[in-house]
Each structure stands twice: as C-alpha cells, then as structure tokens.
Amino acid sequence: LKSATTRKQRTPPAHRGAWCAPASLPVGMDSSAGLSAAPLDEATLKRCLDTAVSAAQAAGDLMLECFARNDANGIVEEKANPTDLVTKYDRQVEDLVLARLRGAFPDFGVVAEETASKEILTDKPTWIVDPIDGTTNFVHRQSECCVLIGLA
Image 1 (cartoon, one colour):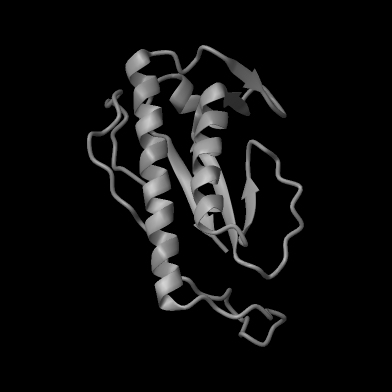
Image 2 (cartoon, rainbow, N blue to C red; image 1 turned 180 degrees about the vertical axis):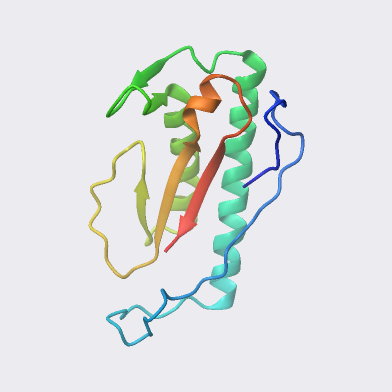
C-alpha cells in the first residue's frame, strides 16, 4: 500500500490504494536460468493479490488504531543500531499479515523482517514482508510509513 503525503501532514491519510509492480524476470535472465518452479496461473496470482491487499489493509487499520491511541512510541527497542527500531506494533502487524498469508497459502515460503525468518529460500513462491516500513516515522506519528508485502 502506498499513499501520497506531504512533510506537513502528520495524520495518516484517510484513503488507501494498492500498487503492484508487474512480475518479470531480472534483466538478462530467462526462464531456463535455473528457475524450475512452474509459474503461478492467473487465478492464483489474482488470489495472491487479493490476499495481500486485504492483509495490508487490515494491517493499516491496526496502525491507524495505534495512531488514534497515540502510543506508537510506548515500547520501542533498538535492533542493530539506534536508528533501526522495532515496536510492539511491528510484531503485531507482522503476526496479523503472516496469519492471513499462511492461512491462504500454507505451501508458500515466508521471509519477514521482525521474526528474522530462518526459512531456506527455494524456488517455491515466497512472501516477503516488512510489517512497518518506516518505523521511525511511525514512532513519531508521521504518516510516511507503510506495510510492505511482496511475492517472489
């Protein structure tokens, strides 16, 4: 999900919109370059998109609830360095998103930021999740933050 915001805006936007990049192989790579998994059919891709958008919207609603309570900075921990933050909401949002994605697609892999997934990457479809991209902004109640969900 993305939203257009300005630096002066300090409350989350009331609207949400989904944006998806078209699936494609990296430049110079063709389907015979070691990719052995069968591509997903259109119906499955549509279901993936619908599930990801629904999960992101539910996660966005949770983030908005936190903004309304004004407690985003209640529990903030540092990860690797003082600018790499994690909050209880990062974990809650990640749990919500992963539950929806795994519930709909139990055979897909998952790589998520906060749980530091140790899952071995294979050629099976894999969800990539950053529950709150822009945690520092989120903690300071700046709306330049979002939920990132990708499918590789």
